[in-house]
Amino acid sequence: TPTVGVGWTARPTEVLGRPSPTDSDCLLFDLSIKTDAFGQETSWEVANTKNNSIVLSNSSLPSNQIVQDSKCLDRKGCYEFVIRDTFNDGICCGAGNGNYNVSLNSKVGGSGGQFESSETTFLGGNCGLI
Image (cartoon, rainbow, N blue to C red; front, side, top):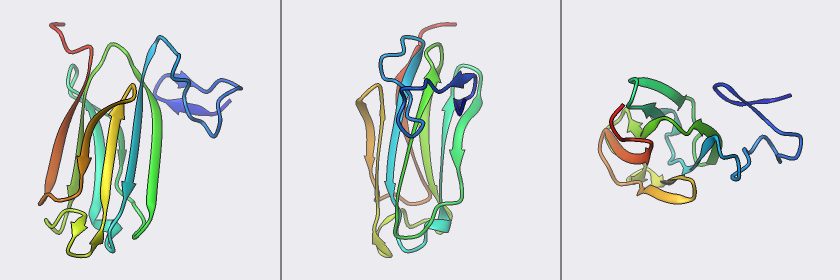
């Protein structure tokens, strides 16, 4: 059975490892990034701010491609998304027309492409007092 995320296992009915949005024990994280001409400069991560852990990340992105990722995240976590560019020119518009869209349980958390070294988006989750 394919692994979908830390501590989560794919169900047989899931298509291409995409988690089921009806799973009451998870928050569905969706990301789409269109990289610019220098994808190797771009990286991203999702952090659980409740325990200061990185739960998802990718630092090897192709250039001029659309990269998509969907994962089931622990419903008990509180999450933020960070996208970075090591050349400090974002992913739009000097070296291509890159952009990103990120959501949690189908609620858009952030989108864009014009930033310098990084952009942080609060996604939500269970963010009350521990």
